[in-house]
Image (cartoon, rainbow, N blue to C red):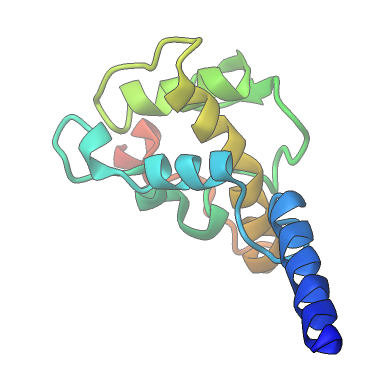
Length: 145
């Protein structure tokens, strides 16, 4: 009986430690990342209700990480200026998604920014072969030219 209780205690501690690590060891998303993922996939955020962030950025595609893999702020061609990550998210909300920007201090904007590194890691795992990158993001207004 004592061995069963001890075994259960060990398993419980291990399970709690996995939760406490915010998913780092289990491959699970943190609550903030999960909330961000939900927002990245939410088509209702677009004006026409048919576009989400993953429409253009499935598996981290078209984040232009092959051109500028470093952290924000940095220059981005679409808005043609140096932007922070939150500014870039809001640019996409306004331009490709034809919607409204999030308030700078909103939880939604923060959660979307929390999910960005997850998308960047997905791109790293699935990045195209050299020379196969799309030179013009299809969500970018220049793609229609």
